[in-house]
Each structure stands twice: as C-alpha cells, then as structure tokens.
Amino acid sequence: MTGRALAGVRVIELSEVWAGPVGGSLLGDLGADVIKVESFPRFSPTRPIDPNDWRVAPGEGPAYEHSWAQHQGNRNKRNMAINLRHEAGTAAFRRLLERADVVIDSFSAGTMEKLGFDWERMHRDAPRLIRLSLPGWGLSGPYQGYVSFGGGFDCVTGHTAVRGYPWRGVEETSPITHSDATVPLHIVFAVVTALRERERTGEGMLVDLSQVEELATQIPGVLAEWSLNGRLPVRVGNGEQHVVPHQCYRASGEDRWVVLAAEDDAQWGALARAVGHPEWAEDGHPWATVVGRLRDREAVDAALSERAGGQQAEALADRVQDEGGIAAPVAGPQEMLLSPQLNARGWFPTIDHPYTGPRIQAGFLWRFAPDPPSWDLPCGLVGEYNRELLREHGYDDAEIDRLEANGAIGYSYG
View 1: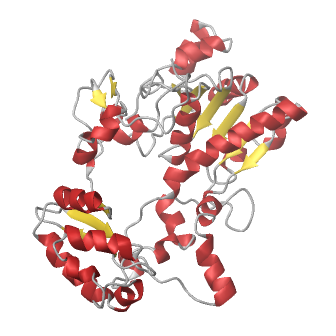
View 2: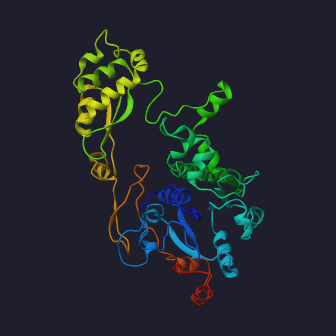
View 3: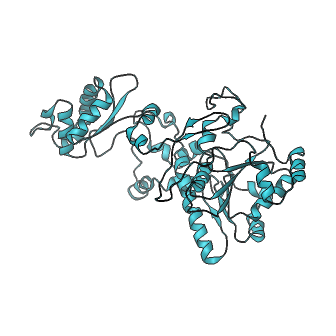
C-alpha cells in the first residue's frame, strides 16, 4: 500500500502531458485518492492513436494505451473519461466536485470558466474545495489566455538564452522542458500548504500557479546580473566561468562521454595524476594554479580531450575518483538500468499492465519510513473507473449506461 500521509484527501486532476499529471501522481504516492478526468472524445497528446508513433510500446490493443509518457506520468490514479462539453458530462463532473478536497487543472486561463466552472461558483457550491490552476501565464495579465508548453516556457523565461554552447546560436539550443520536472514538486507543496491552511480557516482557496513564473524563479541570478550590473548572461555549455577544467569530454567508443572537473589545485592534482600527467600540477607549471588554468582554458580542454579520447569513460572516471578528483561517465538509459546504486535501492519496480505486460518503470522521488510509497495502480485505461466512480457518486447502472450511450462518458478514442 502506498504512503498514507494524504490518506482521506480526494483530488480531481484535469491535466495533460507531464507537469500536472506527474504532480497528481506524487499526491497519489502520498496516499491521496486521485481521480484523473481525461477529456473525451478528444484525446490527450500523450495518448497517440497512431501505432507508429515513437512513444508507443509494442503490445496488443489500442496504441493510446501503450504510450510511455502516459504510463510514467499517471500512476496511482483512478481514470475517468468525461465529455465536459456535454450537459450530462458537466453534471457528472459537478457531482465529483461535491466530494472533492482539491481540483487541479492545467488549462489555459479562462477554459474552466468556458466549461461552466468559474471559481466563484465552485467556491459557493463547495466552500472547502481547493482549486489549483496551472496556466502557463497565470490567471491574470495580458497573456493570461495564451496556450504554451514546456519548450515555450524555456524561451520566455530566459532559460533557453543561458543554456547551450557559446559557439552556437540560441535557435540551435534544444528545448528541455525543464519546468515539466519542477512544477510537479510545486504542485505538492501548494496542495499540502492549502490543505494545512484549510485546517486553520475551514475555507478552501484558489491557487494560481503560473508555470512561466515557476520556471523564472529558478534562474534569479540571470535577472540580477542584468538589473544590477547591466550584463547579459554568458552561455558556457558544459563549462563553468570560474572553474577550469569543467567540461564533458568525448571518450573512446560510440557517443561515449566523461565529465571532468577541478575546482581547486588539489583536485587538479588528482586529475593530472589520473590521466598520466602529474607534471601538470607541479610547481612552476602554467596550469598548476586556478589562475593559470583560467587563463589557458582552451589548452587545458584540448589536452584533456586528447587524453580522454583514448580511454573508456567508466575506467577514466574511476581512476580520477580513486585519486580524489571529480569525474563521472555520462550515463544513458541503458546504464541507468544497470546502475548498482539504483538497483541496490530497488528503484526500478516492474509494473504489470493489461496491454503492455510487465515493464520496468522509474521509481519514486522520496521514501518515508515507515510509510513508503508504492505503485499500487498502474496507468489507468481510458474510462477504466467510470462506472466505479459514478456509482460512488450516486449514479445507478441504468443512468451510467445512458451517459455512455449519449456520449457523456467514454472508454475509447478514435
């Protein structure tokens, strides 16, 4: 059984792709009863209907039940598929709200209102309800209705401008959708905080979590550099302005890399010994001091590139670490799966699913002793819990059958 910190809390989640769904899963990991309401008949971007889509794993059944993004981001939830543009679907959703503690939506600002769920009415009908909204630009301001995704947030916050290699243009910097990984943590923080405040006041609240602002708070130094010093950030790739070496070097083998760094002279000495050039750290050598290495950055990097190119990344990293230096091989998915550290901690659970069968999945962000999370529910099928949840909210089987016949709920796409 999963952790019980949020046992008794019911969360309704209307979100797609990654940030909102993962936040919902984290709440489920903590014991909340999370009801994921998927759109119907429109399908989520993480439920592709094309079996040739690169995100679709092999297996029987519809392609949209095989998507890795849908599986990883939607554990520990009960799935419903409701047509919120259908009058009967809207009525069913209102029933869900009556018993909910929290509702999470990741729509652009104004969408919930267009569906008939403005905050004023929601709060009037359910004064203890907490609504957490995740619009890209927030619920107010001139951009409030704009639609955007993680790659766009990278750009408008300056995240893209400070990443990438100095010899490439900004337009060549790949998006990393960084906020998709950090917004879920803020979802948990905001929900737990709002629940705590409700205990004190007895009232629910509206939480406006702008994903753009969430990401912008992670690079305050960039804003300060401009506002205080009038300087634009310098793009350094894998480097570090004040540390040499600090770089990712190609090792032997196809697409194999090793990271090497030395923050002080002792670490530089360890690195120099490990690559077979202890003289680089001896008194009198131009690279023996931090200042000397900063002055001769390109030559230091060239020398280390030559040494790393003929060696295996893992072996070189081990030697540097044994000497007391900083080094690590760059790991791909295959290396992660073989990681002795992650496997020793049991971080890769094998999760069974009706269509994909047993598959290795990524584990949890935290462990609470003696109340750890567990993967109790795999990613739900489309509408898998429609009937169960509608019964819980007062519908009889005949009424549920009519909802399905009228297109207010569904069980498949395409």
